[in-house]
Figure 1 (cartoon, rainbow, N blue to C red):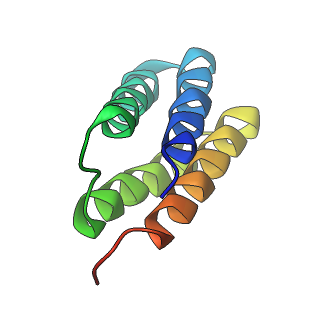
Figure 2 (cartoon, rainbow, N blue to C red; figure 1 turned 60 degrees about the vertical axis):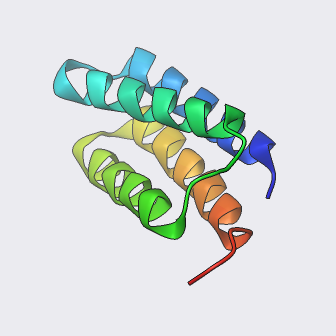
Length: 89
């Protein structure tokens, strides 16, 4: 598992939050913070937690457009790549 993937996903979401408006801005910022926290934890997240983040990002992609939606897709891709290395399920 590469913590850099989580850090990269967090950075992309933070950039997307800065470009977003309304409720999506806060939700993106919250997702960014959550992934940054996971990147610094001794024990990473389990599949269930990562799945919830991925679901939230899917919803946010559908609610946004253009470069914001693209940044969210890229972050979700990084998160999916990270999840492949998580033990279990």
